[in-house]
Amino acid sequence: MISLRCTLLLAGWVILLPGCSNETETELPIAGVRRGSDDDAQRLYNRAQAADKSGRGKKAISLYSGTADKYPHSRIAAAARFRQAQLLHQQGKLDAAFEIYQMVISRYQASSLYTQARDSQAKVAHAAAEGSVTGKLLWFKPDLDIKKVVSMLETVRDNAPRAPSAAKAQHAIGKAYEGRKWKSAEAVSAYQKVVDEYPRSPYAPEAQFKIGKMLMAGASKGNQDNSNLDRALNTFADLRQSYPNSKSAAEATKMITEIRTRDLQRTFDIAEFYFKKGQKSSARVYYREVVRKTGKGNLHDRARNRLQSLQDSE
Image (cartoon, rainbow, N blue to C red):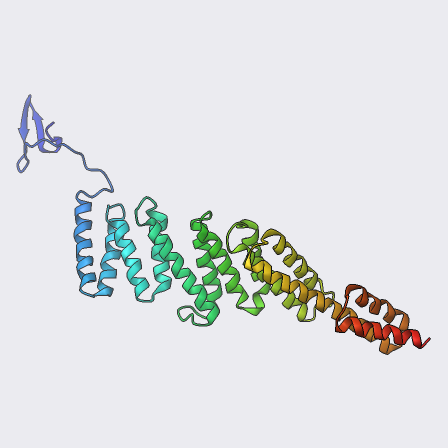
């Protein structure tokens, strides 16, 4: 078919307008699509690679970014964006690298680089989390670092919610919060999510153990009703039942012994308080409780001696 833009029909004759060709059109232009865009993208990508190989990292990053920005649907766009992220990562610009890796993950899921981008992004997030815990996080403002770190780890978790990386990221969230003493409630909640949502992951036993330890620490800070100590005891007992062969289960056994010892000491201290106040009946109740719960040991002997002295004084 001859192009209508180049012809004029006059009295049954087809007249070719000046400057036009009589070649046939095989394709109509489509809005939003640039012909040869893959070739143009490749040329720009080649320039980026040349800068990359010559060690001009800043220039390479700019050209890789330009390739993906101008030709986001080209066959080379994913590779350009991924290499941009890698260079930013190598330069220590982890925050920027994280965001660029996310572009690859969200926009190029069919790319062969998808898994590499996801794994690389996870490394950035965990490096940030580790830096946050050790105090070596230099690329965020101090008052924003915990929020940023948690946000990054949540992104890693949600990018692959059923992969092992999800449990690892959630556990790292708990650890990041744990590193800030005033965030203990958030840490317990984060670790509990590991136990609840990833019970078969290798991070679950340790997460449950961490919960118990923090509850014990809360009791040590003067919790009057000692509910945290009771919750810690139940947490450790559940850990031993759910993960009997784990290293954390062995540690939980030690903690249970410690809690029971602390509980007995508390009972003995109450008995001593009543003994010194001269309230013999009340003191006797608590001393007997110590004797009943212990078969031997220092507290056992001291409680028996007190009971004997109370009996002799009557």
